[in-house]
Amino acid sequence: MDKYFGYLKNLDAKSKRLLIEKLRKSMNHEPKRKFDISRFYGAWVDDRSSDEIIEDIKTSRVEKPDSESFQ
Image (cartoon, rainbow, N blue to C red; front, side, top):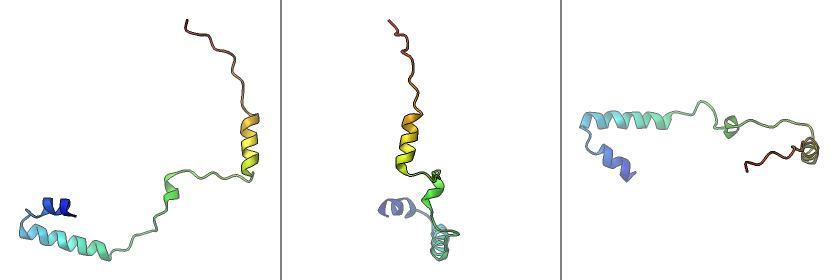
């Protein structure tokens, strides 16, 4: 807070009043919706168990032929 106050203390009185009013209004404002972190990533939807998924991943692996070396 002290860092912000350092920036704001030099404002004129009118600007400080406007800032106070905006802060007061923001305190009374309810968020439009609850914060849900799941909206930031995709959700995995699957009926299989984790063991079944792991087994499917392992069985779907393909062996790559040896690649040529750069020597």
